[in-house]
Image 1 (tube, rainbow, N blue to C red):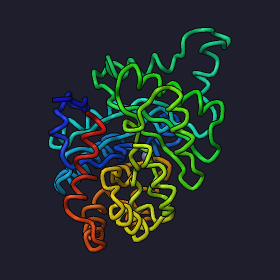
Image 2 (image 1 turned 120 degrees about the vertical axis):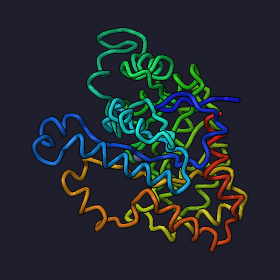
Image 3 (image 1 turned 90 degrees about the vertical axis):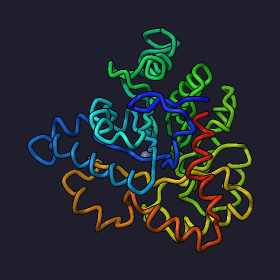
Image 4 (image 1 turned 30 degrees about the vertical axis):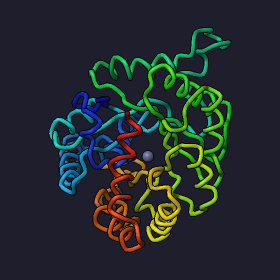
Length: 325
Ligand SMILES: [Zn+2]
């Protein structure tokens, strides 16, 4: 039986159960916190306890696993995630490695690499591989998947270098890839093109944020490659309202694509993009953007739209298991 590394150690893929494939425990930039958060809106102990309570509530809905694609660029800090996960052993938390950039490469990699000022092998491959094989920053927690981005600017030199480093690490280690895409700009196809050149099997790729579009032809074209569509921003109604997301998933299920979709919210226990406004502002600005929206509202709506319990199981249980197998 294949195993997947979670924050608390390896788990049989059969034990992943209902899995939300794209959620964040924390999105917190250390520079933001250290310069503007401390003494203002940042309270470490409060946030850890708050995350524990929120993740316990997720588990109480029947979710057994969340997959957290927070990497460099989104403020990954695994020791804090570990503190939370230890207090919620009923929920598996799977963490990632990679780099999140819409355009340029972080300065910390810009001058190191093949043909650069410091002419060394691709340092991102080295760093990503260490996270997967040895563990992250001395915690012993191992990353179980890779994350990169192809946004509206397309394959800028920085984005392409990150995607190739992710693809090469995948080929060497076998762990799957989640790529943030912009489906309105068709960037899933760009990502798959680069991955294909590097020898990546699309079956090991989740095309994140595919659910932001309702263009069935585009979604079927992506799914026909064998890649999995991340229908993963439920509650972010500003990008696409729940009713449209549900209708799109139902239409794809009817066309035989239930085995090519996964579900999630892309929310977080705390995200510093909103600073002090997170706790009171988000419930007003995006009232559906919560960890329980799928179980409370979306699954009933999918059933109403003709999606069967078997198809829901495929999206919540079987497809995540296949991705990590
Ligand atoms: Zn995300």
